[in-house]
Amino acid sequence: MIFKQNNNIKMFGEKIGYALAYFLFTTVLFFILKLLDKIPNSWSYFHIMMITFLIALLGVVIKRFLE
Image (cartoon, rainbow, N blue to C red; front, side):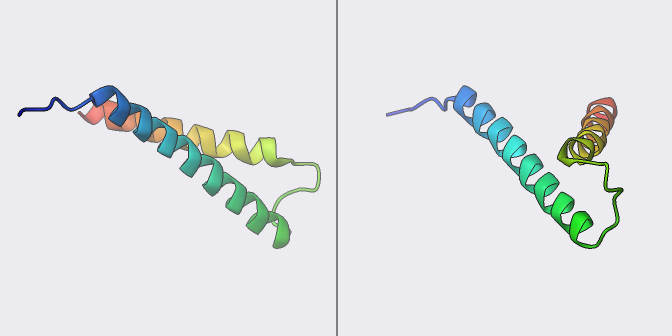
C-alpha cells in the first residue's frame, strides 16, 4: 500500500513549533535581561517581544531572499 504524506499537517506543526520557540525564547530573554537589570524599568515584555519579532522577521526575509 502507498500512503500519501499530509504536508498540511507538517507545515502546521512547523508553524506552531516556530511560534512556541519564539515565545519561549522571548520569555527567557526577558527574564534574563530583567534579572540582570539590563533593560529600562519602563520597558515591558511587549518591548522585548517587538525586538525579537523584528529580528525573526528579518531572518525570514533574508532566508526567502536567498532562496
